[in-house]
Image 1: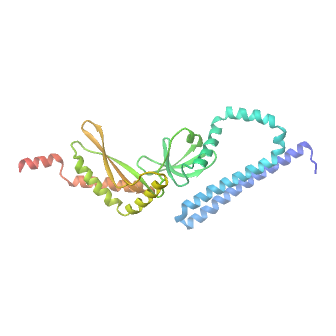
Image 2 (image 1 turned 120 degrees about the horizontal axis):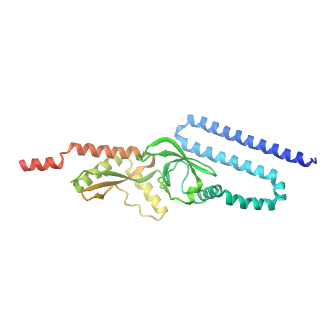
Image 3 (image 1 turned 30 degrees about the vertical axis):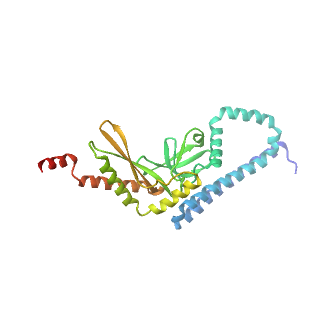
Length: 285
């Protein structure tokens, strides 16, 4: 059937609108389907989230290809105009182009995946969604706890800032806890206390963490044999030190493990006599 010029364009527009609406309905159905499945199987929440994002991106790709197929003949007829338009788009829509390039970099380099705990520039959180323009994080505050807010980061940032992935080694990672020390603290005593406390807190998963970190180190040609709890000191002033406790920890338990170490250390410190009291007791004796 040969349609007049205007009727042909109207048909293409109607088909395009129909395809877009069908894609939106498909995305809504996918979201509801996996949300319903997740309610009955909360142990596999990460898998359902990954399937949701992958299915949504697949629908978007199919919609794009169908629209391209509908309008390809018209696009051929205005190829020269499109070239000029593309140049103008690159100049005027630099950020948009950089977002697509950032998504391409993310797809090729795979610096993180859904469910990973990452830091992208000043933002940190768990990756819950990724698309062609943005990466969405559930924000984690400085105290390693979720704030309840989400952060949508333009993919263009992946081209200009460093990405730190705390989940790169799998289930376990090495974390660091900074503890300010009072004046005249004995570093040897502090180190012994912190190592004993950290080994006690981490005893339940230390062997599994050793295997996971050594396996990751072998795949990346890294020496991660020194994964046991360690304590280092950093001078913050002429008369004050900070203790830096490094320890293996499950990625999802960084907050709780760090809090246990901190609480146990202060409980032990408060139970011990202060250095001034010890000196006074020694002088009386």
